[in-house]
Amino acid sequence: MRAVLLGPPGAGKGTQAVRLVEKYNVPQISTGDIFRRNIKEGTELGKKAQEYMNAGQLVPDELVVDLVKDRLMQDDCKNGYLLDGFPRTIYQAEQLDRFLSGQGQKLDAVINFEVGYDTLIERLTGRRVCKACGAGFHVKNMPPKVDGVCDSCGGELEQRKDDTRETAENRISVYEESTAPLIGYYKETGALKNFNAEKDPDELLKEIVAELGE
Ligand code: AMP
Image (cartoon, rainbow, N blue to C red; front, side, top):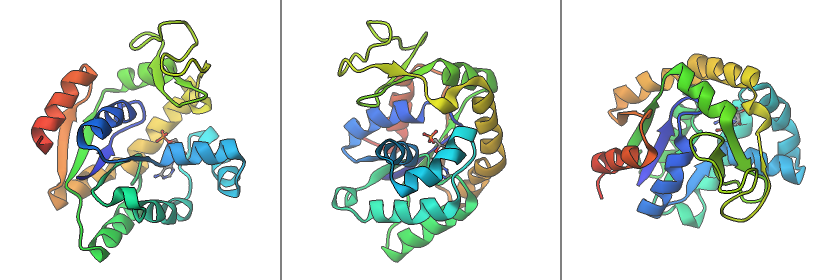
């Protein structure tokens, strides 16, 4: 299954991705995670991406597209993948389409997460992630068993630099301007599936699976 998870920051794409990876046994490809890993490792790419990310801006297309194409050529993507956070611009979507048609493939679904503004802000500013394994929590909605400590690996939880209120607001504006036009783009291709993503994650998973098939 080849699918794109589309939606504003804080819509719960990462939370669903973890569940869908397990269900469909395909890798999650999160461009945000790839950039964060590069920043941590101090690579050239990480250095270039960091300032954009901290400001809540998009990393330029030319730093993103080849990276994703290379990733999709890897062996574990043979039976499909979940793209989380890519494409984020019409240009990226066009490049993805071109890449896919070159391989004689197409997207099976674009899962569009619909969430209201206040919920997004609440989710983003309350989000905490594990420094060690990247597992996600929320101070209110999904608290860890021990405050500040990851349930999965015991690592320390932290707030992402771009989850502060001001940067979160900025990221939502960037989404509206640059990424929301993809909804129209994928509606035309027929791949778009809309979901109300305000609900409980397990409930939402059931709806997505009902649409995509077992
Ligand atoms: P995310 O983890 O998906 O919220 O992404 C975090 C940040 O990484 C974004 O705010 C952007 O700065 C950058 N980023 C991730 N994916 C992309 C992309 N497809 N295009 C441009 N920038 C991206």
